[in-house]
Length: 450
Image (cartoon, rainbow, N blue to C red):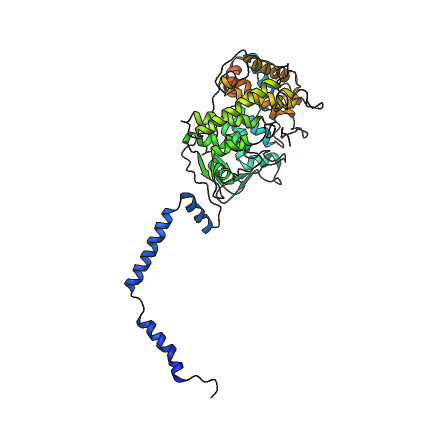
């Protein structure tokens, strides 16, 4: 019949099936092949770099890879000042300035930016006698405990700590409820001495500071607009264990040489705080590397930083005003006065002058302008702070906190150490004339040029 296959055609598939059955590999052969496959896979796996292994594991688990850093160090480093110079600031003047920058904030709608700046200079352990002042442990708890944060802002506010699968992200941006700058909160906590095993309470779970640092390392990108505080935070936590590089979640190798090059890449007018914080971060990285067996930076990078800082010094000498202050456009050197903004706000000179005196306090003398220039700058800061009404200080607290810190550094001490000694002999030091007020809403919280 049409379409009917012949008997030989029907028997052909049967022959093939019988042949396959008769030639089926033995169990021994199967085990040998499987063993060879497993061995080849194991060899290939161990030939991969640790970062490639992490990325494969993360892909299999549908997660972003963790940075390939083993945290053997828990305590952040401290960059110590070099000088105890009473000609720069006296005990009495330093105490008067610190009285103006005591953390006298209202607990309601407490800006993280204010707390971060207060925490970095007052430290996480300072205890005040006045109930109107927020002590160090309270400031730290506000930043790392979502419950305390929401108690200030209310349950409808987005938490500042955002839990990821294997880390904790810090919410940042111009919103008053957020940390203003990327990694500023992390850097401030590092400067305050907060250890990596400090408990952290997110809306989802309890963890530690280590997961905040881990997320920051994983999240870091060299093309970010602001890298000043990332460099500071990473340097302070990683320098003691001499970790100079890691891979981010894109698998890209990041080194402190790259971070330094990124900070030096743009024109000096660019960057946060009128370009001054790049200078401070570079000086801090240089010190952190030198203080830890030159483990963070290559000799070539260290030399480039020194050259960059020498350039900053020359611009500072040429731009300094007769009254001792540095203008917002200090980076224009001798042309700064001629190009001065007629509508310049005075607090911008506070930013420039305070930040410059901070990095000079941890810098060797060869990077200094003449000593009399430093003395004039400090006197200007002291007089400005003494004469500025407290409500204006409160409204520009972030800027004036640098004034208190830089002057303490020039006495080769820290803000909390000096204050404790001063308070012991001046029992009324913390008796405030006014009750704390809610933070003003019109502060230029960035303090930077667009």
